[in-house]
Image: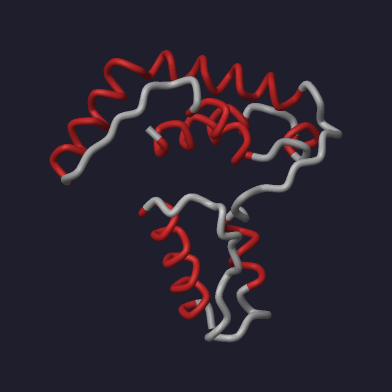
Length: 132
């Protein structure tokens, strides 16, 4: 579901004016939308492919609606200050030239320890090494 929501957020944000999108954090929109959609877990590649197909076939309209509502909710208070749990990939890649090979991205201990987040952390580290 995360991939489909991220794709829809990119699609809908592309239709907005650049002046407006500079005040919208994509991760907030995605999180808001995902919290209003069913979870579709999978433990194998085949299961993941099945869930992707199911989500596209059965939930595409709900995904569009959830993202539209998320954009409206996030836009209500553009001056609201938040601290993201994770940096956007573009931000992490931009800072990679500053960090050394042995530096780790610091994360608070209270963050979730789900494998999804481990993968994100690993991919940002490997991106740092390959960018040099």
